[in-house]
Image (cartoon, rainbow, N blue to C red):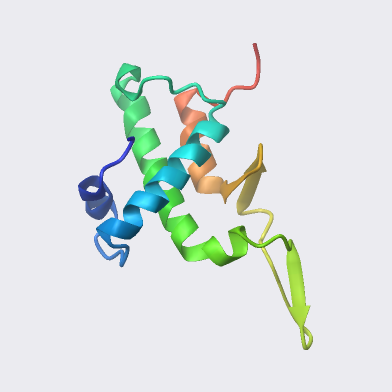
Length: 120
């Protein structure tokens, strides 16, 4: 577990996510973080303090993003229109990598860890 509920509540004190909801969201966000970092976090304790801080920040933001947008993220539609009103994600604020959709902020935190490097 990269982030506890107590740590999350310190970062987002106004969040309405309950502890029960957090468990499911945390699991999904952790899978997303692992996908974005190419499963390079084999042991969280082996990361530097700076990397841990960034991963925790990214986790908190991803949990909130999933909670706020779960209906859209789980939909097979990329955009839709009803009675002349259309809706889609702003591609300048969203990153999709390896089947994971997240915000540019989450991805930028993870890039700073060095764990998203695609080279050899």
